[in-house]
Each structure stands twice: as C-alpha cells, then as structure tokens.
Length: 238
Image 1 (spheres, helix red, strand yellow):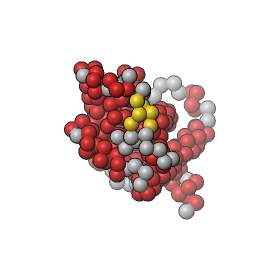
Image 2 (image 1 turned 45 degrees about the vertical axis):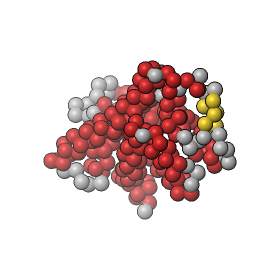
Image 3 (image 1 turned 135 degrees about the vertical axis):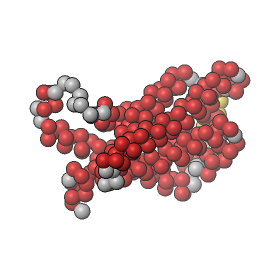
C-alpha cells in the first residue's frame, strides 16, 4: 500500500478516484439546482431531505473527506513535480507545445475553486444544514428570517446580488477548466485511455464540463434576471 500513498502514480490514482466522486456530486448538484427553476416547492423538498438528517450529515462528511483528499494530494503532487523539475521552472517561460493551459495551472485553479467553495458553504451549508444541527429553526437572511429548510429563498436572495452572480460565474469558469482537463487525465491515469480514446475522453470531458457549468450558470443568471424583472420576489429581504 505504500506505493499508493507515496509514489507519483499512486497519488495520481487517488486524485483520479476522489475526482470521479466529486464529478458525480457535481452532476447531482447541477440537477438539483435546475429543479429550483421549475419548482421551488420540489427544490425545498430536496433541501428538507438533505437537511440535518443522519444520512445527509454522513454524506456531507464523506464529501468533505474527498475534497480534502483531492486537495492534499494535489498539493503533494505539485510540490513533488516542482522539486523534480528544480531550476527548469525558471528556464522555460513559454508553454511547451501540446501542453494545455489548464494542465499547467490545475493547482491554481483548484485553489480558486476551494476559495469559492468556502463562500458557497458560508452562504448555503452554514445557514442551512449547520443551523439545523445547532437546533435553530430560523436564520437571518437580509432583513428577514427564513427556515433553514427553505432553500429556494436562499437561492433567490443570494443570486439577486450582482457581485455574487459575478463571483459564481468566475467560479464556474475555473471549474470548467479544471473539469475539462481533469476528466480525461483521470481516465488516462486509471489506464483506460489509449491513443484513440485519449482524444475521445478529451472531447467527452469538454462536453461534460460545458453542460454542467452551463446548468450552474443558467440557474444563477435566471434568478438574478428574475430579481431584476420582478423585484417583489426578493423585496422581503431588503
């Protein structure tokens, strides 16, 4: 097992497996967000099921564990690669031919993504699941109070702020670059990417990243546009 934890290929394998788990979570999250566009009641029902229930708390802990593992091993691989290259980092200022920009900046993209995750958690998870776990049945939202299970109200409130919308769109762009490279790279690591399939996985990765990020972006822009067109939908918070 030491090779899995200490070797470069072992660490990449751990990165790939944890990355696949996070990809499945993104699919679920994007689908759940789209539900809010068509039915706020249905979205709130899902939020209720994912509140302070033991299975939701356990799932959140597992998700946090995979995020931590993914980030820690990304850091270890980055430091290992920098040490192996040594002064070569300073000798080359132009990206080598055939090397994607995302490939050279995966760790930086990861830091941006984690930074925005903290913002996201402070706006949603902390005021919803964590508030429920603390035994509170109401939480402040703007100048009003709502139930921590009323997820649609959180979506409407936060996405009525232009700076929040812009910040999330930047986050989605970083996620797109990270995903579009990470998916085919993960398949390459686990050995399912030959000469023919490598190009196919790259196309699949680009399509997947685009569809998922467009879903996230659509929900964000939709609720902002709705707050502008009909301010009464968020008037209670101002």
